[in-house]
Image 1: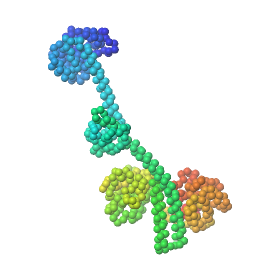
Image 2: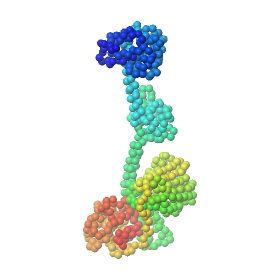
Image 3: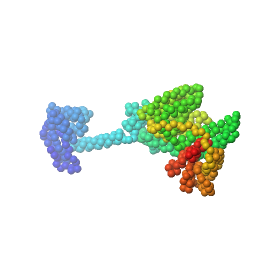
Length: 602
């Protein structure tokens, strides 16, 4: 049945009518028509028919007589609840008492209307439908908010005034690395008073072994006294920022190291060169001879420290070669044992196979020595240091472990920082482990650190296997032959270094021309009428640099050979600027003379 004189703005309402009296049903239909309610009525008068209609789910509202023979309004209400419908349910009765009406409302009826007052029926229906529409809209909005809450990429929570979690989404548990069960009531943080405006970056930890993360946390006080927290995991961003800061720090250190090393290596070249000349000229014995040796040892220690600084600053050129890691460890054993002292025992077990890696031999020695020295210093009362090699998952590994004091998480976070040290002032440079770290990074190796306070420390470094033939170190050459009147142009802006290079070469019979910069070198070369066999030039000089000077001179003297030197620790990268040989300062006499002899083919 469809009512007439309807309000066209209202949709048609599908009403399931439980009524055994046909005349009453018609009366209700006429009432709908007179009140302008657009309705489609489906009448049932038995329990079975009502149940079938419920299961079909095709109604917007249920209107039930309270008294149907063999089937009461309460029975209809119970069936309605069992089926799980949520549409409005209204009762109509001529005899229902107040207690029965209250019982029906408690059982889930939305309203009841007495037949003697049917003028209330249509307003009650419209009110029930509106309430139902409002509830449906609210449920839809609530479901939408729940989806937003659970699917948000941020952790969302409600905390009490003590910072204890009262309500939170699953994302918060994921961010904190723990299950949702253990978070309820967990004190996430001590709330500041007053609450900060805007987001704050802070470290947070979850309970029961939850990980520590860096989070951007926004806090807001709600009207009920709870505090809303919006948490974004910034751990990865923080790590990137720290890596950028570290890269910037290393770049600044590299510039500083290069500048210091250049001047310092020039000083060391002068000290070493003139000391070696003095030893050869004076042939001192006894205490005087020991003094000269001590000067050389101190200069070489200074050179080693400068090399460490350059490695940390990533300014030292590496010369990687295929080497056997087992042989490398065995070669260094005797020297390592001398470093340890009587209270520290060294255990070595080399089982890596294959054991070849691609690494600068000098860098390998620095890695192993620095790790062993670090382990020794961590055991002031003595103990055992274990060095082992093995091959695992296709990588060649070096492991150094000790029984020392171990490290806290705070120390581990800074242990590879340049100049960081836990030793007393004057007891360490803070460059040992940062040197190890820099070499590892340059050689594309992996470094793992396992350490806890009181449980010792283990370092594991792994390299990809090196391909090729193992390089064998060449034995030192005998003293070089005389210069046989070969002419060498020494271009060096440091006068002491220039003088020591000239003195060493002249003592071997070479004819030496000297220039303080590239401009003077060009003038000297132009004035020289004879052959010019070799240019020995510093890379960095005022005006033209060494490689540019070499190109200009070779354009006029293509047969001339070139040796470049540098105190910055790195050779020239441009292939056009590559010299016949490169020497890293400080340059000792034997190495200088050997390089000259080799380049000249003597």
